[in-house]
Length: 124
Image (tube, rainbow, N blue to C red):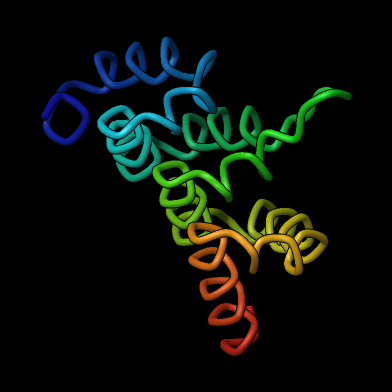
């Protein structure tokens, strides 16, 4: 509710706190809904902060790949594809393309493959 109808400074504070653990929160049933709302109602700078955190990788961990295979986090990735600017969407699509074959083997990864193919058909 605060994300949708709250004051901008309240929303910003929530997003700021959430960003640090956005990947882990995206893999939780209810917290993933909050992450989606942050992406939907955040301003462009707040969205960028969240998306950059998700796209960041450490040497030992590919956050995006683990999210695409997760039963809840895959919806966050789909939301990013829906709301992101061209720059982030292009980065995301190229990162998804690398994992298409592997994603087809996972129940939840198939959702990402379908969304990827839909966007590819639309010429995005």
